[in-house]
Image (cartoon, rainbow, N blue to C red):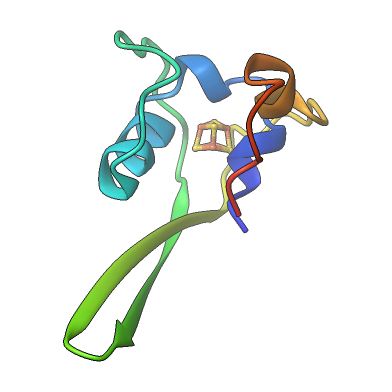
Length: 82
Ligand code: SF4
């Protein structure tokens, strides 16, 4: 699971913006202005039949600041991405 969903910088972060792009989801911000320090990303390849999907998860980051439930507060009607 991506740690960004509980991070203070979530809606300003350029790396989370890139993760959203990779997942093909709508962006929390169109103009991210925060550059995180040393985010570490796990890339998972999932094959199902002839289809392969790529999943990106930030698993560690030197800029992480805990803000539990941040993503959910920004999108209260939606399911938190996993
Ligand atoms: S954990 Fe790092 S990469 Fe993820 S939103 Fe926070 S600052 Fe950005």
